[in-house]
Length: 447
Ligand SMILES: Cc1ncc(COP(=O)(O)O)c(C=O)c1O
Image (tube, rainbow, N blue to C red; front, side, top):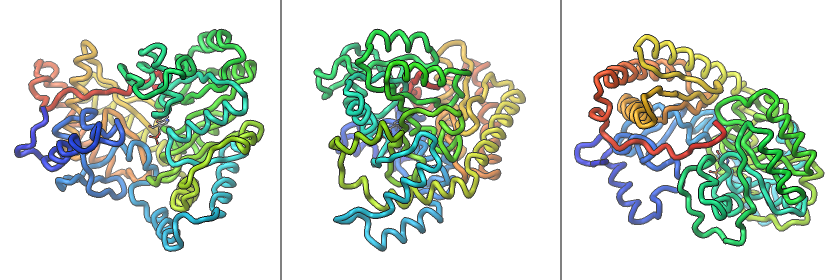
C-alpha cells in the first residue's frame, strides 16, 4: 500500500524500492523492515541520530522509542563514549598482535556479572550465542540444545525447524523455512515453553545425557514467575547441562551486572551484545571457569573480535552505565511512562494498558479480536510517527530520554489515544489506516 507521491517519507520509500533490487530482503535486520511499522508512514532510512532523537533521510525528526533496536542505552552519539572511541581510533583499530583492552574489559565484566569468571568476545548477539553453544557442546561432549526465546540467525538455532517446521513459531516468527541449514542438524535444537518447569524436566528426561545446553532469555519485558529461573538452574544441574542466559535484549538495563544480578539467579554462562557498547559492534560470552576454560582447546577465532573500537566502546559504556546510574534512571522513566499512559488511556476511554518491566514497557490494546488489536496497534504506530515518535507499540528505553522527551511523547499519545478511541467506537479503524497492517513477526514465548 506504501506510495511515494507527496509522502512525508518519500525518499525513504524510494530507497527501500532500490534496496529491494540490490539487497535480498532489503534490510540487514528483520526488525528494520518497514512492514514491521506503519509501512509508508514510518521512516525507513536514517540520516543521523543524537541523544533521544533520530532524523530520517526526508528531514523528519523523531523521538526514537526503539533505541537502535536496543543497542542504544546511553543515547545516540554519546559524547563520552564517542570521545573515547575517537581517541582509540587515532591509535589504530586492529593490530597484528593483541591489545590489553581485551583484559581490561574482561576484568570489568568479571567484576560486574555474577557468572563471569572468564570471557570471550564477538561482534554481535547471534554470533555470541553461537560461540556459547560451541563452548557448551565442546565442554560437555553433547550435541543437543534446548532453547527458549530468540537467539539470532545461526544454524544451531534455525535447525529447530528442520524436524518440525513450527518449532520456531512461538520463539521467532511463524513460517520460517530453514533454507540453507544442513539437514544433518535435524533434532539438535529443541524448543521449550517459558515458565513451565514440568515440561522442561520432561524434555530433559527424554533427551537424557544428550543435552549440552539450555539457552534461554531469562526474561524479555515481564519479570519471570516466582521461583521459575531457580527451578531451571536446579534442572540444569541435575542433568549436567550448561545453562546459558541470553541477555542480549535486556543487557544492562535491569542492573549494571545484567539481568542475572538483578534476579539473583546465576547461570553457567551468559551472552551480551547490543547495549554493552552503545551502538558499536560488540558482543561478549562470559561464564564460569569450569565451562569456559575448555574453550582454549576449541577453534573459536576471528580477526575483528579484538577490534579495539568495540572494546573501548564497551568499556566506556559499562563505566558510564554505573556512573550515571542508568538502570535507576530507566526504572524511573518507565515507571512514569507506564503511570502516565495508563492515566491518559483512562481519560480518553481507550481500552489499552501499558505494562511490563519499567525499562521496556509495552502497550496491550484490547480489541474484539486479534485483527482489531493489530488495527489499533498499527494505527497507533502510524499516528505516533506523524507526531514525531518512532516506535512499535512498546518502549525500548535509553538514558537520554528525559522529561522533555517524555512530555512530548505523552502529548502525542493523548491525541492518538483519543483518535483511536473515537475511531474504534465509530468502526472507522480501517478507514483511518494509511498503510497495511504491521507484521508483528516476533512472537516470542519470552514476553
Ligand atoms: C535475545 C537476543 N539474542 C540474540 C539476538 C541477536 O543479536 P544480533 O542481532 O546482534 O545478532 C537478539 C537480537 O535482537 C536478541 O534479542
